[in-house]
Length: 226
Image 1: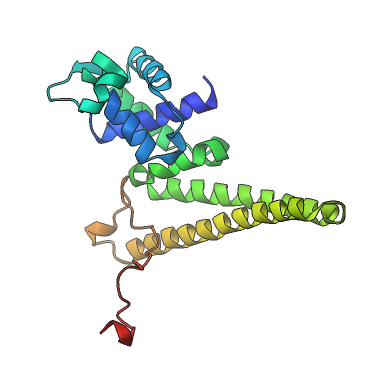
Image 2: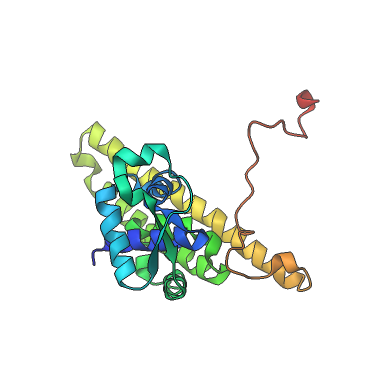
């Protein structure tokens, strides 16, 4: 199995863990909710679904409700099939969620893993985030060394492209730092109040996300908002 196929299977299992879906609904969720899958087509998705069914991780059921009208010309009769996660499939997905090795924070897989952090335990989230940060910090150091060695030999446009690449990595490192600090703060808060059920370390708990103020709402501290 290629890494890309493995990412798609992981995402399909994760989405079906939330609820059973038609193939059309799955593709729509993959495209709209998980941007990393925008390039996937029905020609890629349905072989993946068949593989998961053959593995015993999914079952096919007749659809009981109307399908989206726009699915008919794209998927034909296949849109009437509902895919449901089996008990074995759920267990397999939970095993995948618990993995924290290098594959969990590589470029190809990190976005998919992050998309399912709501179903992932806090300790696993922390290890994946820290692994991703460490990998990017190593990459950033190599980029800076390369930039310092070659800047005198490159034209302005190539230099600007290299700067843009470094700035992109720097931004992601800062973003990861915020997430990691928020996860740690949430963990410390849970430990300080063991009686608070809302702070229990359960899969699906998302209290570690940093709070970003909605820029469309007035700031209460701004006198002009009164």
